[in-house]
Amino acid sequence: MLGQRGDTIIEVLLAFTVFSMVSVGAMTVMGQGSNASQRALEISLVRQQIDAQAEALRAAQQAYVKQYTYSDVDVEWKKFALANESQNTQHYTENGSCPTPTWINSTSNGAFIMRPDNASLVTGSSWYSDPGAAVAPPYAQVQSGGPASLRSYGIWIEREYVESGTSAPSLFDFNVRACWFAAGLDIPMQIETSVRLYEPGS
Image 1 (cartoon, rainbow, N blue to C red):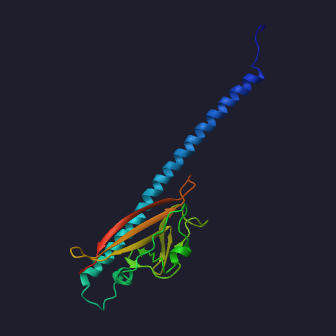
Image 2: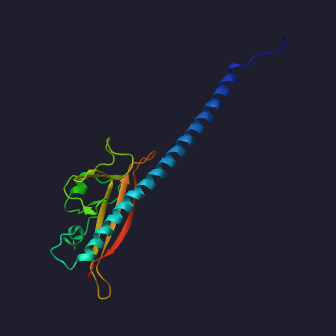
């Protein structure tokens, strides 16, 4: 019909630009929401891993409390608490990265890990793996492939010994720490919990 005209190229480009901006904004918000949900899930799963380490520490101490008068019993508490008890673990300083296997496995640093299934100390020098490696799981965790094998991806325990005073018993502060590379973040996530256990008979 006479008097009708189509959209000009300017109007079409303007409409396409507005639609593109709205679409990109919506996808960005959706991506951020998805990453936030993933991080919340990972934090919950890592908390479970940390709690398992804390329970293993408590179980080892309780096993020793039941029989600490028998000096010939080789219980786990002796291995990670009473051996070199005055030597504290070096505290890992957050510097935007997770500790490397070299730092963890250094005997001078004194970091260790527990088997959550039987509350035993993991020995050896290769139990820790870099949580940023290509083969690492998506969140910090302790994986066990059998009775003799265990790998920790970003979880370790630091120990601090506090000698008894005139009115207080000796105690150990165990810091169970986790570090992993979460979705959508440039720096790794790090959480920890502290477990205070008293030395039996002190």
